[in-house]
Image (cartoon, rainbow, N blue to C red; front, side):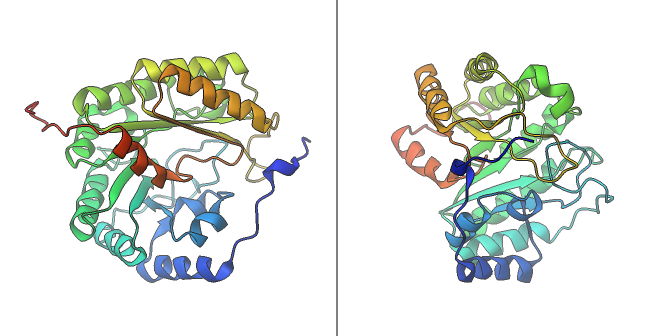
Length: 298
């Protein structure tokens, strides 16, 4: 068994602030990936009054062996009140930037795209000054469903590549590396003004060359933002950690990613896909893009 090093120790949270966030979530009957996926940064994020909302869950239709989200329960029908409740939570928490993600809903014809759209519209209506990031599944390659989400005009589309191609069969057996790249490519083609983002986990047995290869592939589809973080085994039933990557290696990947042209690379042992996601607002200010209509007019 690989022993967890000192650089992965997490500071104990201030539970008063955590409790305030949890109270809003419980009152409105909402799920967060912070809790469902056992994120190590839950204390810091809840202390800062932020959370990554998990819609259409908490039961997932896939059984990725690295993920702690429940896949054994049967997914429930979509709740039409969820977008309104989510928007109210964003309003109560006064969020300047919100991240909305979901479980995989392969049981739905559109993979849940319409629910994403309704959540985006509800937040835009309740908190027009809030920037919106959606972390979406691969939708089983349903590109018409992807367009439903894009037409709602969020600010950032995030889709995680998760790992290197060689490890896909073991780490992400129901996913396809090429399909995930295709999704990010189509986002750029359909909405060139939108910021795209992806993330990978390390410590599963990948090599430095393989990580750099993924970074190259993401830049080939013009991905703007990259997150790289250490995989941590949620329970004994999940994939084992192959190794704990040292902080200086994350720094090297960050510098390499910046040299490739990523607008932002967030890389550290505790980095997760939505960790410090609000920093994208500074990126948008420094690298503004004109929003084009979906018809192609300027």
